[in-house]
Length: 466
Ligand code: FAD
Ligand code: NAI
Image (cartoon, rainbow, N blue to C red; front, side, top):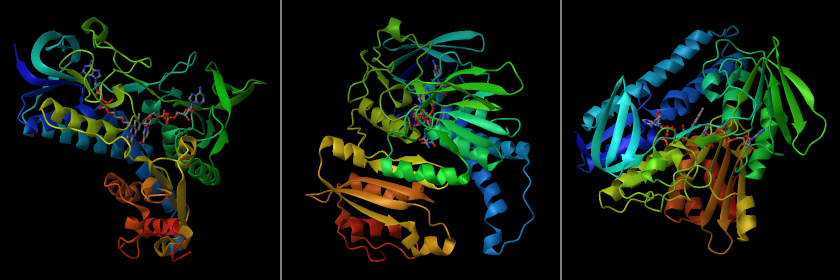
């Protein structure tokens, strides 16, 4: 029987990164994966394919609508959807191969099949018609998450799709109705709107992107509406009739009231994700779950069973790939007897639309609710030189700092490249920096990042270009 120091179940960004770090620290490691390819949700049906389609569809829209004003004259671009899907697949394949390479390089055994925990130190792997049991000192559960479903609405991944189906539609739907104005709805809605779909988003709450700063969300909604998105906020979908050529969707006010019927070609259900623990044998092994079905862990990723740990989407916290990766590293370090740590106060979030939205730390709503006195500095891209010459002036940078100490508590950016720009704020916050520190840091000219420095100056009411 094969024996290991560590067996990681799941090879998403949490699992494979944990395995690599453990191997670097000298452990004999195996990963177990039930999917045909490594990389988990993120590489196969999540972050990566969605970003490939976001990039390609953005280029398509730019070629159609933005080139001419810069004096670049091209004939109207034509969509070759199979070629675009092939571009997406090449990106996935490249990244999956990258993970396979990392497993080989770090001498990590890849056990193909479904993993099941038989108890502390024992994992059963079943796949390709055979079952084997491996012994290990430690187990990390990194089995990720699955789509949340709406009662009574069956996902066929053709006309009623989850994000997985929406990443592989065979043709551009004339009409797409999206249930949920969260990250997936706005990103994949952007892809299909750019390619020609009429997009309507039905959201239960009275705002989009819950959890993001309210002012940012409000401005973002206006920008998306200008692009052609339609929103039905404070509304819920109660059923989808699939019997006809068009889907008939029943929508009601969230608070109750008269229902209306909307016709559409495709419905995308994206109302969140749920932890995935099916078939892992957790109950029999004695691994406790919390009241939302997530694997319960302590501050060292330890579950209720000694030697069994859990990380990533399957535990509490934001369901983000970089959060899973950082937990993977910290967990491996803790197992190796080192001081692994994740700073949950500094985990950035990015929505990869046009413009992008990025955020780290507290929102104004959270600070108000916690009764923290704060000052705010805001700088619009309309006053940023580089944005002006490129004619991409939508959005702003907002910095929230402690009123007494000036320590930066939150940064929120809406604008082109916001996802890249957020990281200087992350480093600053990791070091407990102040708005004054940021304001005194020299920023290259002309860059969009100068707007971050100006927003920091605005905290002290001394922005130069405004
Ligand atoms: P996963 O990536 O879900 O991996 C879990 C793996 O475990 C899977 O491969 C699964 O097959 C395997 N597994 C499960 N059970 C077993 C078992 N019993 N035996 C063996 N193997 C098993 N996050 C971002 O940060 N940025 C983004 O841009 C982003 N975009 C996204 C877009 C979409 C459409 C979706 C759906 C998600 C996106 N996410 C994004 C979220 C991101 O994909 C997840 O947060 C991340 O994948 C979680 O990593 P994980 O390692 O915890 O689990
Ligand atoms: P989400 O949690 O971001 O948004 C779900 C939305 O659906 C919310 O606005 C919620 O109020 C709404 N909703 C819930 N029930 C509803 C109902 N019955 N009717 C109408 N609206 C309803 O979840 P989403 O978009 O499915 O994404 C899942 C996860 O994937 C997220 O946690 C996110 O972190 C991750 N992800 C991250 C990305 C990124 O980092 N760029 C991209 C895509 C996904």
